[in-house]
Image 1 (cartoon, helix red, strand yellow):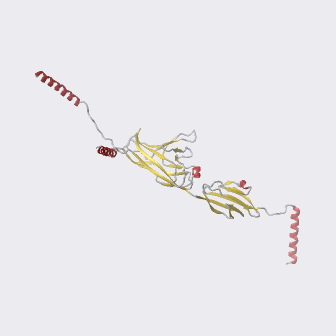
Image 2: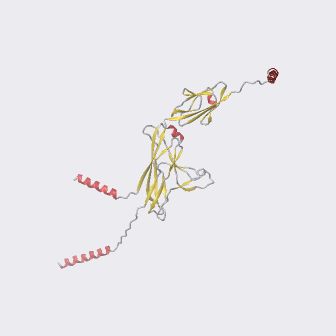
Length: 151
Length: 182
């Protein structure tokens, strides 16, 4: 008896559910995204020098993969006759941070750009007038010798 | 016996008169109001570029509206939560934003989860295709602007992207629509 009452009640509820007009509708939009496990360090080198990233040396521009949230160490060494003119990180000048020649990059969360410019040092030249006159006199003597003795 | 019979007949007469009087006191009128019909269009499922601070994800609109009237509208409620991943423990919080057609003059709007958009019914039985919103100007010398919403924007601050661990993330925006009367 109880079972038949339960069955009848369930049937009644089901019928009601179908008869009641649906006035609320719900739809969904699904968004997806992928967070990468590594990023690219765009190393841009202009001039002669060496840039060490995590112990690996680079003398030319290169795209270097860096683990996401990594903090690579950067060392910069200009070649002989050259010096570091500027260092920019994502277009921000950070030259002053390389006084010791080494820098720890902030946690990498996206692709980044590190640009280093090495410039050639000025050549050694005489700066006083007496030395200039002496050189000019030597050049003149040599030109005379070439003219009268080698022609 | 005669007295009893006359009493019974008198009571019967009284009751029959009462019944006749009550049967003539009401008139029942019936009518059927057809349900308003419409098609709800929502942004498509899509991939969001990593690192994007703002992404146009499309809009919510209503088409094929019928059976509406002035004051008989459709209210759409948006519910959403952070991006989550089954392989990473971090989440990526975001918000849904609106922009005016003049974004340099009018402030953008953030729609928190649970916000509603109202599509107004028209007197001819149709319904506006887009919801409308009042945008506030940056300048105190400009007036507010009442515009239709043709684009929704997904807004993710750079810091939220930065904190997220590597992995695949998913988020769901649920749009619940119902006919409401003002």
